[in-house]
Length: 333
Image (cartoon, rainbow, N blue to C red; front, side):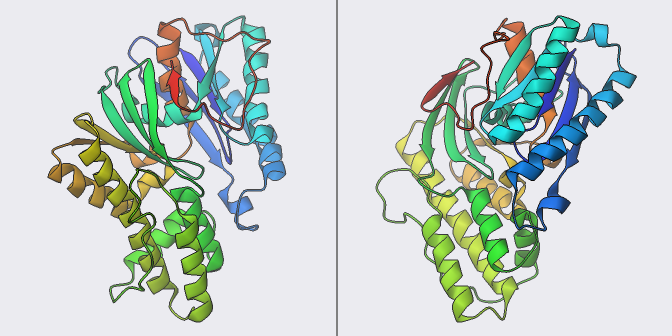
Protein backbone atom coordinates (compact mmCIF):
# COMPACT_ATOMS: atom_id res chain seq x y z
CA UNK A 1 0.00 0.00 0.00
CA UNK A 2 0.92 3.65 -0.41
CA UNK A 3 -0.06 6.25 2.17
CA UNK A 4 -0.60 9.65 0.57
CA UNK A 5 -0.87 13.12 2.10
CA UNK A 6 -2.39 16.30 0.67
CA UNK A 7 -1.99 19.73 2.31
CA UNK A 8 -1.41 22.15 -0.57
CA UNK A 9 -4.05 24.66 0.54
CA UNK A 10 -7.09 24.34 2.81
CA UNK A 11 -7.90 20.62 2.75
CA UNK A 12 -6.15 18.15 5.06
CA UNK A 13 -6.37 14.72 3.47
CA UNK A 14 -4.83 11.25 3.79
CA UNK A 15 -5.46 8.15 1.69
CA UNK A 16 -4.36 4.54 1.36
CA UNK A 17 -4.05 3.10 -2.16
CA UNK A 18 -3.26 -0.52 -3.01
CA UNK A 19 -0.29 -0.76 -5.35
CA UNK A 20 -1.26 -3.96 -7.16
CA UNK A 21 -4.54 -2.70 -8.68
CA UNK A 22 -4.65 1.03 -7.76
CA UNK A 23 -7.71 0.46 -5.59
CA UNK A 24 -8.50 3.21 -3.10
CA UNK A 25 -8.74 1.47 0.28
CA UNK A 26 -9.23 4.45 2.56
CA UNK A 27 -9.68 8.16 2.07
CA UNK A 28 -10.72 11.05 4.24
CA UNK A 29 -10.28 14.80 4.26
CA UNK A 30 -11.05 17.60 6.67
CA UNK A 31 -12.03 20.87 5.02
CA UNK A 32 -11.24 24.29 6.44
CA UNK A 33 -13.88 26.11 4.38
CA UNK A 34 -16.02 27.19 7.34
CA UNK A 35 -13.04 28.79 9.04
CA UNK A 36 -11.71 30.64 5.99
CA UNK A 37 -15.19 31.79 4.93
CA UNK A 38 -15.03 34.24 7.87
CA UNK A 39 -12.23 36.04 6.01
CA UNK A 40 -13.52 35.68 2.44
CA UNK A 41 -10.59 33.51 1.38
CA UNK A 42 -7.75 31.30 2.59
CA UNK A 43 -5.53 32.77 5.30
CA UNK A 44 -2.22 30.85 4.91
CA UNK A 45 -1.12 31.02 8.56
CA UNK A 46 -4.50 29.77 9.79
CA UNK A 47 -4.48 27.03 7.16
CA UNK A 48 -1.04 25.89 8.30
CA UNK A 49 -2.12 25.70 11.94
CA UNK A 50 -5.22 23.71 11.05
CA UNK A 51 -3.15 21.22 9.03
CA UNK A 52 -0.88 20.81 12.05
CA UNK A 53 -3.98 19.90 14.09
CA UNK A 54 -5.95 17.86 11.55
CA UNK A 55 -3.30 15.75 9.78
CA UNK A 56 -2.27 13.89 12.97
CA UNK A 57 -5.95 13.11 13.65
CA UNK A 58 -6.32 11.59 10.18
CA UNK A 59 -3.04 9.71 10.50
CA UNK A 60 -4.09 8.13 13.79
CA UNK A 61 -7.37 7.06 12.24
CA UNK A 62 -5.74 5.42 9.24
CA UNK A 63 -3.01 3.69 11.27
CA UNK A 64 -5.66 2.29 13.59
CA UNK A 65 -7.28 0.68 10.54
CA UNK A 66 -4.26 -0.69 8.65
CA UNK A 67 -1.09 -2.63 9.38
CA UNK A 68 1.65 -0.04 8.90
CA UNK A 69 4.14 -2.74 7.89
CA UNK A 70 2.12 -3.06 4.66
CA UNK A 71 2.82 0.57 3.73
CA UNK A 72 5.60 0.51 1.14
CA UNK A 73 5.98 4.24 0.37
CA UNK A 74 4.72 7.70 1.33
CA UNK A 75 3.34 9.99 -1.38
CA UNK A 76 3.04 13.67 -0.52
CA UNK A 77 2.13 16.85 -2.38
CA UNK A 78 5.21 19.08 -2.66
CA UNK A 79 4.15 21.56 -5.37
CA UNK A 80 2.41 23.83 -6.20
CA UNK A 81 0.58 25.34 -3.23
CA UNK A 82 1.05 27.47 -0.14
CA UNK A 83 4.53 27.00 1.29
CA UNK A 84 3.32 27.10 4.90
CA UNK A 85 0.74 24.37 4.29
CA UNK A 86 2.83 22.17 1.99
CA UNK A 87 5.50 21.97 4.68
CA UNK A 88 3.02 20.44 7.16
CA UNK A 89 2.36 17.49 4.87
CA UNK A 90 6.01 17.11 3.92
CA UNK A 91 7.21 17.02 7.53
CA UNK A 92 4.67 14.30 8.32
CA UNK A 93 5.74 12.36 5.23
CA UNK A 94 9.42 12.58 6.15
CA UNK A 95 8.72 11.48 9.71
CA UNK A 96 6.82 8.42 8.47
CA UNK A 97 9.52 7.68 5.92
CA UNK A 98 12.13 7.61 8.67
CA UNK A 99 10.02 5.65 11.14
CA UNK A 100 8.92 2.97 8.66
CA UNK A 101 12.18 3.02 6.66
CA UNK A 102 10.33 3.37 3.36
CA UNK A 103 10.83 5.69 0.36
CA UNK A 104 9.15 9.06 -0.05
CA UNK A 105 7.56 10.25 -3.29
CA UNK A 106 7.02 13.96 -3.97
CA UNK A 107 3.92 14.64 -6.07
CA UNK A 108 3.10 17.55 -8.34
CA UNK A 109 -0.39 18.56 -7.27
CA UNK A 110 -1.49 19.35 -10.85
CA UNK A 111 -0.51 15.89 -12.07
CA UNK A 112 -2.46 14.55 -9.11
CA UNK A 113 -5.55 16.30 -10.47
CA UNK A 114 -5.02 14.56 -13.81
CA UNK A 115 -4.87 11.19 -12.06
CA UNK A 116 -8.12 11.93 -10.23
CA UNK A 117 -9.61 10.58 -13.47
CA UNK A 118 -8.14 7.13 -12.78
CA UNK A 119 -8.84 6.56 -9.08
CA UNK A 120 -9.86 2.91 -8.54
CA UNK A 121 -8.74 1.85 -12.00
CA UNK A 122 -5.44 0.55 -13.31
CA UNK A 123 -5.62 1.84 -16.87
CA UNK A 124 -5.39 5.42 -18.07
CA UNK A 125 -6.62 6.86 -21.34
CA UNK A 126 -3.50 8.43 -22.84
CA UNK A 127 -2.87 10.19 -25.17
CA UNK A 128 -5.23 12.82 -23.80
CA UNK A 129 -5.59 16.57 -23.50
CA UNK A 130 -6.85 18.10 -20.28
CA UNK A 131 -8.42 21.37 -19.21
CA UNK A 132 -7.25 21.94 -15.65
CA UNK A 133 -9.36 24.52 -13.80
CA UNK A 134 -8.70 25.14 -10.13
CA UNK A 135 -8.38 27.91 -7.59
CA UNK A 136 -4.84 28.65 -8.70
CA UNK A 137 -4.50 27.35 -12.26
CA UNK A 138 -6.20 27.36 -15.64
CA UNK A 139 -4.27 25.31 -18.19
CA UNK A 140 -4.59 23.11 -21.24
CA UNK A 141 -2.20 20.18 -20.88
CA UNK A 142 -1.39 17.58 -23.54
CA UNK A 143 -0.36 14.13 -22.31
CA UNK A 144 1.32 11.91 -24.86
CA UNK A 145 2.06 9.17 -22.33
CA UNK A 146 2.48 8.81 -18.59
CA UNK A 147 6.00 10.21 -18.70
CA UNK A 148 5.36 13.32 -20.78
CA UNK A 149 2.86 16.10 -20.10
CA UNK A 150 3.14 19.47 -21.84
CA UNK A 151 1.41 22.74 -20.97
CA UNK A 152 -0.14 24.15 -24.15
CA UNK A 153 -1.90 27.21 -22.75
CA UNK A 154 -2.48 28.84 -19.38
CA UNK A 155 -3.94 31.92 -17.74
CA UNK A 156 -2.15 35.25 -18.00
CA UNK A 157 -3.51 36.46 -14.66
CA UNK A 158 -6.33 35.10 -12.47
CA UNK A 159 -7.52 31.51 -12.69
CA UNK A 160 -11.06 30.36 -13.46
CA UNK A 161 -11.68 29.15 -9.90
CA UNK A 162 -10.06 32.21 -8.33
CA UNK A 163 -12.36 34.52 -10.31
CA UNK A 164 -15.41 32.74 -8.86
CA UNK A 165 -14.04 33.30 -5.35
CA UNK A 166 -13.44 37.00 -6.02
CA UNK A 167 -16.85 37.61 -7.58
CA UNK A 168 -18.51 35.86 -4.64
CA UNK A 169 -16.57 38.13 -2.28
CA UNK A 170 -17.72 41.21 -4.24
CA UNK A 171 -21.30 40.03 -3.74
CA UNK A 172 -20.69 39.41 -0.02
CA UNK A 173 -21.34 35.70 -0.50
CA UNK A 174 -19.59 32.81 1.20
CA UNK A 175 -16.22 31.20 0.46
CA UNK A 176 -15.48 29.18 -1.62
CA UNK A 177 -17.14 31.08 -4.43
CA UNK A 178 -17.61 28.27 -6.95
CA UNK A 179 -20.56 26.46 -5.35
CA UNK A 180 -22.42 29.62 -4.28
CA UNK A 181 -22.04 31.37 -7.65
CA UNK A 182 -23.31 28.20 -9.36
CA UNK A 183 -26.24 28.03 -6.93
CA UNK A 184 -27.18 31.67 -7.52
CA UNK A 185 -26.82 31.28 -11.29
CA UNK A 186 -29.17 28.29 -11.34
CA UNK A 187 -31.88 30.36 -9.66
CA UNK A 188 -31.92 33.07 -12.34
CA UNK A 189 -33.68 32.62 -15.69
CA UNK A 190 -33.98 36.14 -17.16
CA UNK A 191 -31.82 38.33 -19.39
CA UNK A 192 -28.12 38.62 -18.62
CA UNK A 193 -25.86 41.62 -18.22
CA UNK A 194 -23.60 42.20 -21.22
CA UNK A 195 -20.19 41.30 -19.83
CA UNK A 196 -17.03 41.14 -21.99
CA UNK A 197 -15.70 37.76 -23.09
CA UNK A 198 -11.93 37.82 -22.41
CA UNK A 199 -9.50 37.48 -25.33
CA UNK A 200 -12.35 37.14 -27.81
CA UNK A 201 -10.24 38.58 -30.64
CA UNK A 202 -6.90 37.28 -29.38
CA UNK A 203 -5.10 35.23 -32.03
CA UNK A 204 -3.41 32.79 -29.66
CA UNK A 205 -4.70 30.34 -27.08
CA UNK A 206 -4.63 31.68 -23.53
CA UNK A 207 -6.88 32.54 -20.60
CA UNK A 208 -7.51 35.74 -18.68
CA UNK A 209 -10.08 36.61 -16.04
CA UNK A 210 -8.88 39.92 -14.57
CA UNK A 211 -10.78 42.05 -17.10
CA UNK A 212 -13.99 40.10 -16.62
CA UNK A 213 -13.60 40.34 -12.86
CA UNK A 214 -13.24 44.12 -13.15
CA UNK A 215 -16.31 44.32 -15.40
CA UNK A 216 -18.31 42.49 -12.74
CA UNK A 217 -17.05 44.95 -10.13
CA UNK A 218 -18.22 47.90 -12.24
CA UNK A 219 -21.59 46.25 -12.80
CA UNK A 220 -22.04 45.72 -9.06
CA UNK A 221 -21.20 49.39 -8.44
CA UNK A 222 -23.81 50.35 -11.02
CA UNK A 223 -26.53 47.98 -9.79
CA UNK A 224 -26.18 45.35 -7.09
CA UNK A 225 -29.92 44.77 -6.57
CA UNK A 226 -29.95 41.36 -8.27
CA UNK A 227 -26.99 39.17 -7.22
CA UNK A 228 -28.57 36.18 -8.99
CA UNK A 229 -28.43 38.00 -12.33
CA UNK A 230 -24.83 39.06 -11.69
CA UNK A 231 -23.81 35.51 -10.76
CA UNK A 232 -25.48 34.04 -13.86
CA UNK A 233 -24.00 36.70 -16.14
CA UNK A 234 -20.50 36.16 -14.75
CA UNK A 235 -20.67 32.35 -14.91
CA UNK A 236 -21.94 32.53 -18.49
CA UNK A 237 -19.13 34.88 -19.58
CA UNK A 238 -16.40 32.93 -17.75
CA UNK A 239 -17.50 29.62 -19.25
CA UNK A 240 -17.88 31.13 -22.74
CA UNK A 241 -14.27 32.29 -22.47
CA UNK A 242 -13.09 28.77 -21.63
CA UNK A 243 -15.17 27.27 -24.42
CA UNK A 244 -13.94 29.76 -27.03
CA UNK A 245 -10.32 29.03 -26.16
CA UNK A 246 -10.96 25.28 -26.15
CA UNK A 247 -12.61 25.47 -29.55
CA UNK A 248 -9.63 27.45 -30.83
CA UNK A 249 -7.37 24.73 -29.43
CA UNK A 250 -9.37 21.96 -31.10
CA UNK A 251 -9.17 23.80 -34.44
CA UNK A 252 -5.49 24.74 -34.33
CA UNK A 253 -3.95 21.65 -32.74
CA UNK A 254 -4.11 17.99 -33.57
CA UNK A 255 -5.63 17.37 -30.20
CA UNK A 256 -5.94 13.76 -29.00
CA UNK A 257 -9.35 12.14 -29.24
CA UNK A 258 -9.57 11.83 -25.47
CA UNK A 259 -10.30 15.01 -23.51
CA UNK A 260 -10.91 15.67 -19.81
CA UNK A 261 -11.67 18.44 -17.33
CA UNK A 262 -10.01 18.23 -13.92
CA UNK A 263 -9.48 20.44 -10.88
CA UNK A 264 -11.74 21.84 -8.20
CA UNK A 265 -13.59 24.18 -10.57
CA UNK A 266 -14.36 21.27 -12.93
CA UNK A 267 -17.21 20.44 -10.52
CA UNK A 268 -19.19 23.31 -12.08
CA UNK A 269 -22.21 21.59 -13.66
CA UNK A 270 -22.84 24.30 -16.26
CA UNK A 271 -19.22 24.07 -17.47
CA UNK A 272 -19.42 20.27 -17.64
CA UNK A 273 -22.57 20.42 -19.77
CA UNK A 274 -21.09 22.97 -22.18
CA UNK A 275 -17.77 21.15 -22.56
CA UNK A 276 -19.70 17.93 -23.20
CA UNK A 277 -21.52 19.64 -26.07
CA UNK A 278 -18.24 20.99 -27.46
CA UNK A 279 -16.63 17.54 -27.32
CA UNK A 280 -19.58 16.08 -29.21
CA UNK A 281 -19.16 18.75 -31.90
CA UNK A 282 -15.46 17.89 -32.35
CA UNK A 283 -15.88 14.15 -31.79
CA UNK A 284 -13.84 14.03 -28.60
CA UNK A 285 -14.38 11.45 -25.89
CA UNK A 286 -14.92 13.34 -22.63
CA UNK A 287 -13.65 12.05 -19.28
CA UNK A 288 -14.71 13.57 -15.96
CA UNK A 289 -13.48 12.88 -12.46
CA UNK A 290 -16.16 11.98 -9.88
CA UNK A 291 -17.37 15.14 -8.14
CA UNK A 292 -15.98 13.95 -4.79
CA UNK A 293 -12.46 13.87 -6.26
CA UNK A 294 -12.52 17.18 -8.16
CA UNK A 295 -11.32 19.26 -5.22
CA UNK A 296 -7.97 18.72 -3.50
CA UNK A 297 -7.69 15.22 -2.04
CA UNK A 298 -5.10 12.61 -1.09
CA UNK A 299 -6.75 9.91 -3.21
CA UNK A 300 -5.53 11.53 -6.44
CA UNK A 301 -2.08 12.01 -4.89
CA UNK A 302 -1.99 8.33 -3.98
CA UNK A 303 -3.13 7.27 -7.46
CA UNK A 304 -0.26 9.13 -9.09
CA UNK A 305 2.17 7.96 -6.41
CA UNK A 306 1.38 4.36 -7.43
CA UNK A 307 2.68 5.08 -10.94
CA UNK A 308 5.85 6.69 -9.62
CA UNK A 309 6.35 3.74 -7.24
CA UNK A 310 6.03 1.23 -10.07
CA UNK A 311 8.64 3.21 -12.04
CA UNK A 312 10.91 3.45 -8.97
CA UNK A 313 10.75 7.26 -9.06
CA UNK A 314 11.62 7.97 -5.44
CA UNK A 315 12.92 11.23 -3.99
CA UNK A 316 16.02 11.82 -1.94
CA UNK A 317 14.93 12.35 1.66
CA UNK A 318 17.26 15.30 2.26
CA UNK A 319 16.75 17.01 -1.11
CA UNK A 320 12.95 16.88 -1.21
CA UNK A 321 11.49 20.32 -0.56
CA UNK A 322 8.25 22.23 -1.09
CA UNK A 323 7.72 24.73 -3.90
CA UNK A 324 4.79 27.16 -4.19
CA UNK A 325 5.18 27.19 -7.97
CA UNK A 326 4.71 24.35 -10.41
CA UNK A 327 7.01 23.07 -13.13
CA UNK A 328 6.53 24.99 -16.36
CA UNK A 329 6.59 23.80 -19.96
CA UNK A 330 7.07 20.06 -20.19
CA UNK A 331 7.15 18.03 -17.02
CA UNK A 332 8.06 14.38 -16.69
CA UNK A 333 7.06 11.51 -14.39
